[in-house]
Amino acid sequence: MFRRILFPVESAAQEPQVIALVRLLAAYGPLDVTLVRAHSRMPESNALHATSAELDQLAARLRSDTVDAHYLLEFDSAEGGILDAAKYTQTDLMVLTPHVRHGLDSLTHPSITAKLVTNAAAPLLIWPERTAETGVEDILKLPGAAVILPLDGGELAERALPYAIDLANMFGRSLLLVRITPDFVPPMTIVGEGALVTPEILRAEQ
Image 1 (tube, rainbow, N blue to C red):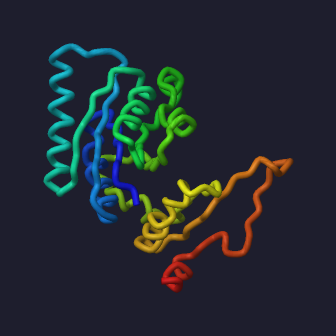
Image 2 (cartoon, helix red, strand yellow; image 1 turned 60 degrees about the vertical axis):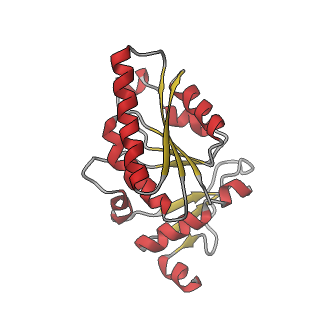
Image 3 (cartoon, rainbow, N blue to C red; image 1 turned 180 degrees about the vertical axis):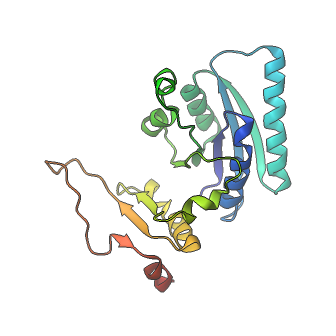
């Protein structure tokens, strides 16, 4: 299972989501969580002190839940700082809660998540952006929600399978296992028997 978790935190608004997701992952065993915030340049002393205090407080809250938690400040591009932190901490899993941007904002602030998908050496858990008053579990309570797990045939991807099965069971949702291959031209989707795993099947297998 995953133990060393890296959690990029852009702002204090993410605190409820960070706490909820860490508690969810901690159900699988002891965690060593590193919170990281990347700055493109060294901020002024007041801003640096405020950022350090904010992350220190969040780490303390996680430690109160018996999670080993620390924080790092990186001074690089957002992508470079996160990747450096992952390498330094030997991260097993990187948890991202990306901020959805629209219109001109999406052009002036390119997606860091998209860059990390192609460059990160560790598995990524990408959790959709949500409002502060919504709980982590509410996404899987939405009508039509499903747990989707991409598999590429490698051991790294398969390590996420127990988490996906547990989430599907916990919320009574379908589990869809997906593999993408470039060998078919034109592009097509093949759905085989058993490709869509229903909650009933998952419960029966247990």
